Image (cartoon, rainbow, N blue to C red):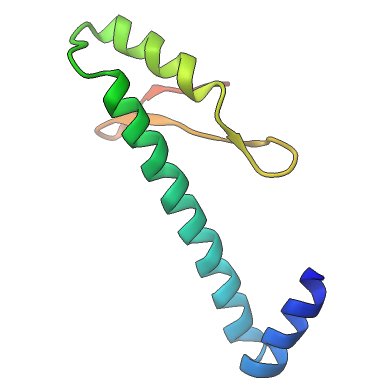
Amino acid sequence: MVIVGVSRLVEKYGIDDAVELMVEGERNKLRLATSSVAHILGKRLEGVTDDNERAEAIAAYINAFRFEDDKSGYYFVYRGTTVFVHPV
């Protein structure tokens, strides 16, 4: 049924507009997912000040969080502009 929905978007808005609407939908899903994970991690890390303990706790959580149908999507955690924890 996705193809029917996409063809209706193309018919209504044109190809460029339909593509932008689909991309914006994906952006919104990623924003919500990222905000949710950040909130969960923030709650888990309250009071944890040791960097190693923080990294271990973050790794334990983000290793379990995958997205996309094939589970190829995953989260990175940055400290400033440097990767702090990476699940792979």
